[in-house]
Length: 203
Image (cartoon, rainbow, N blue to C red; front, side, top):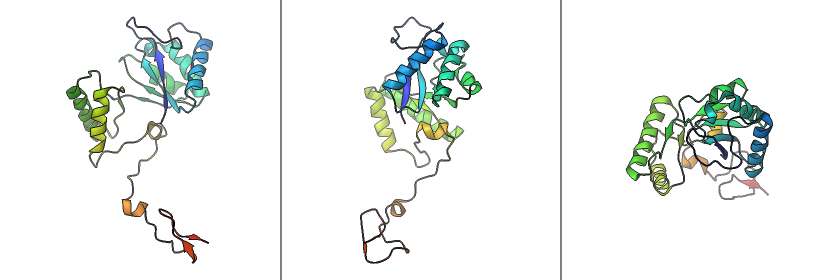
């Protein structure tokens, strides 16, 4: 699933992208910036905040944002860069489906630290049923994910954010032999052509 990673004002003095969301912005300014982001990422199904420790704690700014997300039928994921965030609460008040991040993979870029956070996400998922994990495209993060996903425990399943936002029931995949059974179905009429991975197709 594709998300808009929207820059938002942090508490620290850090340079913010031109189209970021700032405290004091009007509803029109927020609407223009979200429209710009939508044009840049047209296939996005939702949006989450990049930085934003100041922005997500500001009810007025979050109200402007959520009104736009509701208008465009976009979901929201709060990266939870600050404990006092009101983003998820304001989202739900405005009819926007919202979820919170649970685990940050790479506050530290050290390989052992990222690995520890990955293992923590597995424990969190087992305890709570779901673990929403956020990371960055860094060398050690990618390495940990490649190794971890390749050896993922059988009781853990990866799902897209859209499945969580839509509250879809996650069904474990069928055994390989059932997914790729190429025998003709009982309703097939001979003569049929056997295409790989398809049931018999009548001529």
